[in-house]
Image (cartoon, rainbow, N blue to C red; front, side, top):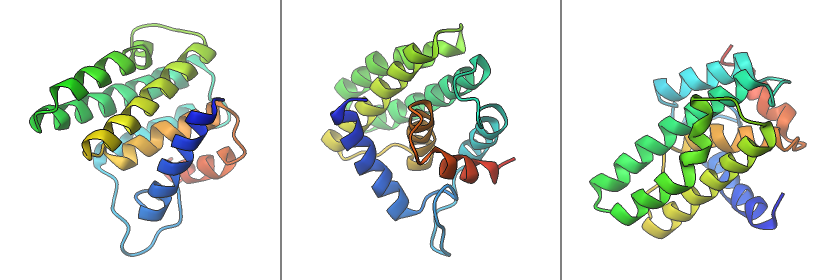
Length: 163
C-alpha cells in the first residue's frame, strides 16, 4: 500500500472518527446520523462483505456504493461551479464504478477504489467541498478491509450493526 494512500486514509479516517458520523466508530449523542442511502449500503456491505471482501458480490456492492458516492459528490461540486473538479472525479472514479457492469479481479478493484478515494480526498482539500463523509467512510473502510488492515475486525463489527 502506498505511503500517500496511508497518509490520506489515516487523515480522513481520523477526521471521520473525530466527527463520529457513523456507528462504525464510537458514538455520542452529538453524532450525525448517516443518510438512509448510506445506511442501506452499510447493510448491503454487511450482508455481502464481512469476512469475504474479495468476492465478486462484495466488490460489485462496493463499486455500486462508490458510483453513488462519486455521482453525489460530483453533483455537489457542479452546483458549486467546480467543473474541473467534477472531471477529476469522473476520470479517477470511473474504474472504481466499472464493477457495477462486470467482474474484475480484487486487486484491480482495490487499486481503482484507492485511486477514487484519493481523488475525492484531494478534490475535497482543493475545493473545501466535502463528500458525504459517512458514505466516504464506507469506501475507505472497504479499502482497509481489502488491504487486510488490522482495523478490519473493528470495521466489520461496526458494519454488523446494520445487519
